[in-house]
Length: 402
Image (cartoon, rainbow, N blue to C red; front, side):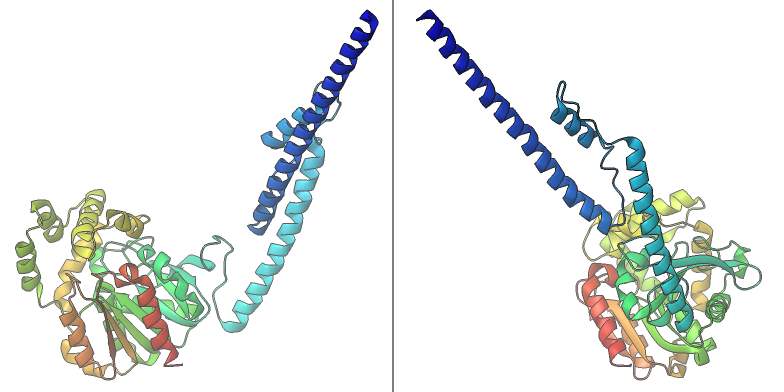
């Protein structure tokens, strides 16, 4: 009887141990399968993004191997040397593929007269950028994207740079070869003597860039003060202008008193008044004041985060802004708008404080055959506040003229 009890207890213990071992094995191997499945999914995603994960030597996989092996099971992680060889082989294969793609893109670009592309940044079309010698020894920094008809993009200000456009206009890269650049004295371009910043010189710089890139004709898109430069270009270089796009701009800054009067009526506060009317000498203080003006007056809907996205990468120049205030008197081509004979699209925000729709209407009346689009929920930046509608308007207008 005692022996039978002992044997029964032993059998129970053995069966229990067996069940525990089976359960432990199921747990261990089940965990491995789950980790392997997750790893495979991540590996596939990484491979699609061009990233080689170090699976064998990752802390998670190392822990999984140690858990699986347990005491005395003798299962070791993959040796690091094997993982390195695998990584090197995958990396080499990937570099060969990328190199082949680069060569194919370069051949396409040379065949179509385009700029060489880089492979940086998966979110947007490839961007090519480099400084060039433009006029009178200065340097113009430019960045080009897209494969359509070439289009010079002229930023406003002055005192800012071209980066405010990139996020919003990049999707047009399938219909335009967008050539963003910083005007002389602005952004990453050279800083020649400030007196060389004139409307005529800025237009000459744009044509020097066109010539450098080898384009016979270009479209020109100008925003705000950049629109004034675009109008100067249209009048000085009509033989090289294919199309003109004017965004939130004016033919003449002859309504400053109206703007100031409206500003006082709005009574936004002394700090905003000071930021709008005065230009600080210090670049960092200038940046702060311009962000304040853009936040309170630039957009139809209040959104400080949008301002950070707009100016997050901006290189500021208080001196260039002060110079542009001096040039406003020269930006008066209202009497010469009839000389512009190229297809022209005028885009304006209904609530633009700086360049109201009445100024867009003046441009529309003066330029024969021009078209005007007013965005009802936008201020000075319709390409941001109504980005989709803005791009649709540009696409439709371009499609009707191809």
